[in-house]
Image (cartoon, rainbow, N blue to C red; front, top):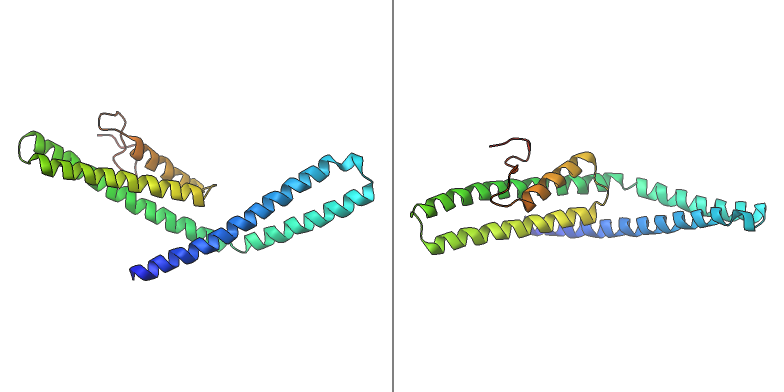
Length: 178
């Protein structure tokens, strides 16, 4: 089942690279349309209309093709959201365990090796969370409100330090204070 997930992710990445290519083409055509508008006064009305119409049709064609992939984008956003939620939950649980472990270490219950292993695991989770956040930002440059809120909370969790005030203790209710 892990191989199936990896194959699905590669397949999704291939589709996303196609969409990025379409978006690049769209941005290029939109920029050319803007330049055509800027040059309007330097050419005859017939030439202007012919070239503008041609590029407007290309833009509409690309927009139609991109709109046909909205379900793919929604699916990718949902996948990334669920992945981020799992990671944030795991980080929260690990942070709690580390805090407990630090207390137990401070009272002499654990030895130095156990303490170092726990800190190393926390660092791994931070690195993993950072990678996922960067991956989400790269793949979804204009997130919807829900994903943007999750990214904001994730960034707060990722950047918070042990002695910080106003820490995030709960992803689903980040305003909760202890």
